[in-house]
Image (cartoon, rainbow, N blue to C red; front, side):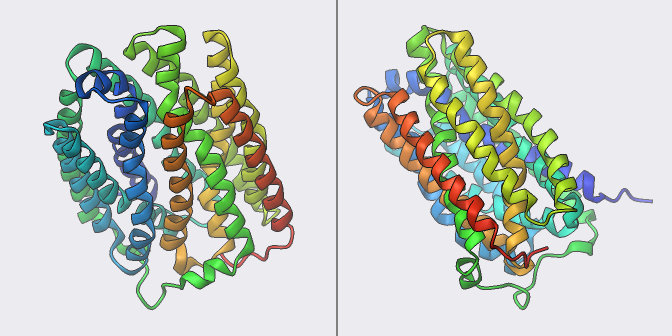
Amino acid sequence: MAWQPNRWSLVGFLWVAFALNYVDRQMVYSMFPALRAELGIGAERLGLIGSVFLWVYTLSMPIAGRLADRGRREWLILASLVLWSAATLGGGLSQSEGAFIGWRAAMGVTEALYFPAALALIASYYPMETRSRALGIHQSAQFIGVMVGGWYGGWCADHVGWRQAFVVAGAVGIVYSLVLWRVFLRLTPVAASATAAQAGRLSDLVRSPGYVMLCLTFAAFCAMQWIYWAWFPTFLYERHHLSMTDSGWNATVFLQGSAMVGILISAALADRLAARWPKARIYVVTASVVLCAPFAYLTFSAETLPLARLFSGLFGLFAGSLAANVFAAAYDVIGAGNRGLAGGVLNTMGGLSSAAMIYLAGIWKETVGFPVMMMWMMIVAITIAGATMLTAARQRMPGR
């Protein structure tokens, strides 16, 4: 009898695809010194290279979410993997700064197709009682991808050249698309993609105050998180005079490793709490923001490398708690027919704030400085999270 993927093996195969997604997008941030030397550009232009992907990615996300609600999610996922891998190859073969930025933009469009479709597909297989664990396991791939991409990009820039990193990563993605294609061919249609008749409307999202506040909370969190992911390697490189390999490793292993622990603990906890208290996931998300925000400020204020490692690890622990539950919390407060769109819009809010802060951090790093930036972002994030918690107390739960 031919092998048939079950729902947990499906999460496993999608986990690998999502990890590759983040390796491809993240490795560039550990290469900033090499790109600066080869292209002769300053911090502001490096910030643009880092943020153009996110601008395009996030603006494409609502359309990708609606496609996920109306089409075959599994084939949208497969097309995304093939196309973003081709764009990664193109980045490695670029001969000019303009071409490189163009391929980063193309990667943004093609990677946007993956996320809403994957989340909606997983959510349709898992009931409320196990949804945080399933989505949390899938979300953990981003932290592994960031950690591997941070090390891999720095190592390649130091030893074999940044171009080779993109070529190899793109080739791996194309090969893996063949594996995923075979999985989808054998996938039973138990949780087929939502049809056009089942798909909801954008106005349904706007009318949910809990969902709107979750979007704002996620945006405030992502602004902090992506300064870590984009600029922490350069911060360590400049302050502690590490190599690109060492700065990429130190900037990711403690942060992402602790995030994995946070995901595993909080996902199981939130599923258990949600079985008794319908609003538990929203409260877990808001508490995670309140707890992680101070460590964003402390990390970039630390005078020694061990302290920076410690504080980044504590930030990652609570960041993992948010990552495991934020999309499951959104699905608790919206209808099932809007899962693709809800995931896309939520990710758009996070992406827009992330892209803006990556770019602004490049402009302000020499004048304002990272500690002051993080202090204000901490204040904003805690304030919004508190408002979301109060809003959740009056939120009805139609999505369960």
